[in-house]
Structure formats: structure tokens, C-alpha cells
Image (cartoon, rainbow over all chains, first blue to last red; front, side, top):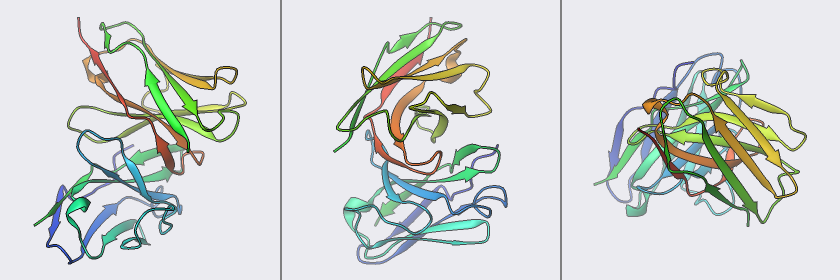
Amino acid sequence: QSALTQPPSASGSPGHSVSISCTGTNSDIGGYNYVSWYQQHPGKAPKLMIYEVTRRPSGVPARFSGSKSGNTASLTIYGLQAEDEADYYCSSFVGNNNLIFGGGTKVTVL
Amino acid sequence: QVQLQESGPGLVKPSETLSLTCTVSGGSVNTYYWSWIRQPPGRGLEWIGYVYSSGNTNYNPSLKSRVAISADTSKNQFSLKLISVTAADTALYYCARDRGPMSYFDFWGQGMLVTVSS
């Protein structure tokens, strides 16, 4: 099972927005609403930011937003802040009873 | 607040068995699913598998022939065994609570680096 496809990097200025795409297939992202997004700062464990495509866990700022269209999911960060600089990973349930992650996107705040 | 802590040897010889334990506090392994996830140095995440309290398990097809995950409800722990390891198994190993199965991971351990080397 191949990893989901994410751009290796994305960037934006403070206060602006940045979007990260995560592309899969009909067997994963396109077939199920079990897409999640994780933020990982260097040397730290991943942190859940979005689950079930659009839902935010308690404590995650509202400027983090998830969406999906067809086989592609997206994470948008509005009002970018310095602490948002991190690696971001998407994941999806797969129809053969598996779970896969994307390769990760490094977000840089300019 | 649920907390997870990985423990086990940080160095394993090639062809031997990697064994890790995750101790859960603030929650019970009798409920939810519990997963292992790994991250090779400088690379992305890979789901390894999960265990449910009843002993039900499911594994990543790419690792299925070499992995076993079990739970010890009396100690509130779950464990990972990976046999016949090679250098490619060198990674940070995380345990996490799985709200799934295989849907999303809401609590993670801090991670444990396991190096496979002679």
C-alpha cells in the first residue's frame, strides 16, 4: 500500500493562510471519512489536529480546518502563527483493513 | 488525561526480536483500541497494528508476518513484538490510543528509539 501523497513543503507569512493537500485513491481517502491530520514539532510526538475529515479535538485552535474533495483531503491553517511551524502528516483508513499516512509536509512560517 | 509511556531495549541485534511495552495511565486498556506506530529517523509515520481489550488484533499487511501485539489488562499495558529485525526496523516507536479501529490517534507516548545493530 503506497503512502498518501503530500507536498514536501509549504510556507506562509504570519497572519496569512496555508493549505496542505493529501492525495489518495478511491480505496482510502475517496472511500471513507476517516482522514486525520497530525502536527509534529522536532523531537516531539505527533499531535492530533483534525479527525474524521473536518472535526477538531478539544484544545485545537479554530484556525485549523480540514476538508475533502474526491480522493484529496486538505488541511488549511488560517492566521498562521510562528508556533505552527512543524511537520504535518495526514492519514486515512484503507479498505483492506489498513491505515496509511502521508509522507509529511514541512510548514515554514516566513 | 490519558498518558502512555513506551519502555524496552533501545538496541536490538539483527535477526533478533524487538520487544516494547506501553504502560497506560489515566485510562484503561479494557476500552478503546491501542496501536503501535513507528517513524524511521528523518522519515514519515507507519502504522504497525492494534490490539483491542478482548485480544482482537489487526496488523499492517506489510509487517503482518513478523509482528504480534498483545494486551495485559491486569497491568494496564500492551506490548509489541517484532521478529527477525533488520536495520530497516530502526525507528522511533510510538504507542497511541486508537479511537478506531484505525480511525485516529488522540493520545501518544513520547516515543522510544530502537536501533537495530550488531
